[in-house]
Length: 378
Image 1 (cartoon, rainbow, N blue to C red):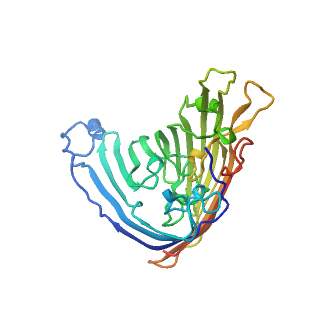
Image 2 (image 1 turned 90 degrees about the horizontal axis):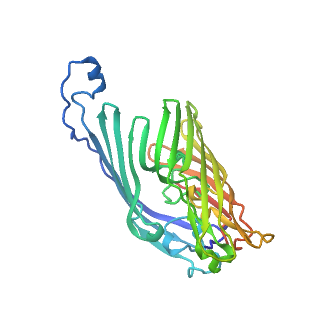
Image 3 (image 1 turned 60 degrees about the vertical axis):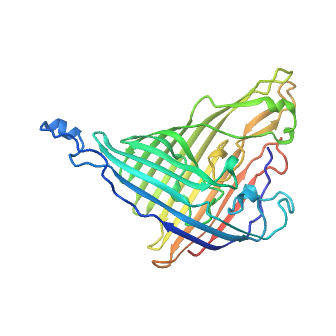
């Protein structure tokens, strides 16, 4: 798999964006619990008038703009750096107007009192097709999540991700240098206080590899990825009057097996790891600084716009294993200021980057660096 190296900017001007918010509701669905006169039993039971409450939310969003240059047509309404052209006119001529409603979103939240605490659920989807549905306006699950007390499970933001580091922007894809991943997980939050939060999670594993300059070799067509254990993530957040500071970590094991019976043995494994330091700083009453710094290797799958976790490294001194896989080191930065002009208008301005230390077996056109800048008036 080859990815273009992109240091170029993408010129895009948003002409019109509209949003229609759906109101919330509260609905009684749970039957009243039985009365009890036992004090201990009563303390373990939800209140007699406890009811399930629910909220329906979402918006319909029209996104119209003009791209003064070009991008992969499947990503026409984003500033996604890994989808920029790797050579002149790869996707045709410049200057294209686009329109769509793919950012539209719908969700339902519920809360049900139980003897173990409130059972909270979220089900949320949008219409922005990715993967095999890239370029389509189609169902895309964002959250399918339930939590009770200290435990939670389903698909939700990975603890490695800090959603509050994202700037106030209508551009869908966002900064290239942010850890940004919703994943299937089982989460334990032993500390959830007003000023501190600590969580751990076992997450669904996954990674991608780049065959690089050997992509057409039949020997590589028989390399099968395998993930023997879940990804392990954790995060701690301290909240103060000035804002908050947060640190998150990730550890993962990535294996690949050579199932072709030939003279080569190309099986291998790598350890992926990462640290994400993020913060929101209150700079007066009208400004918030949103910053994040990520460092690691083999964690590109958890980043907002980073294509490859494992690259091919030449190993010429070994005739049996002439190539090996390498967890690609990376660093990423995101720094934005959100400013409120008044009750109706706000702006966000800032910069984001990521740099990947590619392996020597990758193609010269493989993505290795991205630069993203944003300024708006909303």
